[in-house]
Image (cartoon, rainbow, N blue to C red; front, side):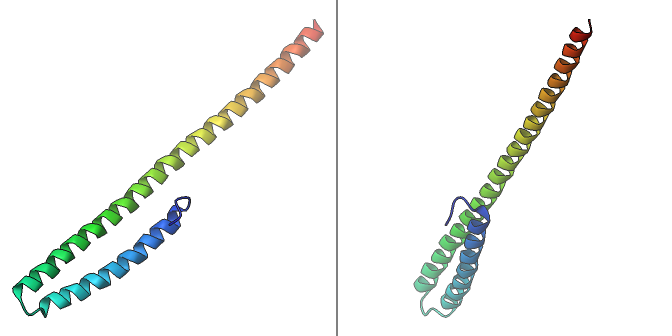
Length: 106
């Protein structure tokens, strides 16, 4: 996994979730054909554990998406402030030039 590329991370996790889903189906089939109740219970318990792993992966994807959203919002606010700051500097420069011209004319 590459922490600097959240899109790749999500695709990588989704791919693993698809594999996990296939394994869950296979384990469920195995549990249905198990000879003893104890074997069935053991397989069902493993299925429950793996479903919990899948939930954690979904949580991670949601967390990464929301953190990236907040980061992008902060970047947008920062860009707006930089633009506003530049506009203010331009306005100050224009006013300074106007003041200089007015002082020269006096």
